[in-house]
Image (cartoon, rainbow, N blue to C red; front, side, top):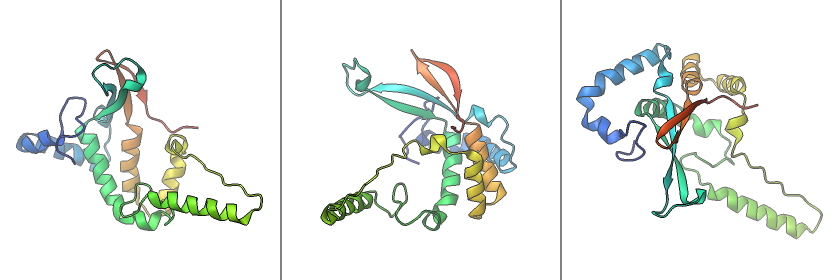
Length: 192
């Protein structure tokens, strides 16, 4: 994890964790032992995100002059990182070769080149054709979690990994910071 990037709600970064490791080590080990034993009760306290707006410029006045940032607890980040590292070696086999976003060793630019070549070919054919672009940016917001878990199960992921993923997903929430104070909790749930 980058040392000084993206502090959590308490302001702590990975650099803090490294510097204070002898002090916080046992607490972190205890949390991971609870998660390993699939006892995720109370993990929601460590899986809360504070959403705030940071000004892009000193004289920020309108909404476009700000950028949102999510302040995530280090423990939740580390747990998600552990799961992603376990998943990473299997990604090439799980994700089709023509899907390039967020897969190490693949380039999203390849998709642009493929679309451009397809559009040229369709134009050269000089026959009525249709090129359809689907925006899947919000796909995760609408995917059925039971469906996601069944697909992962069919791909051979064990019940423990799926239970860890369920703990991470089901315990996540966000609070929007309004004038420096957290607003009501927004629980992350799968869409419909």
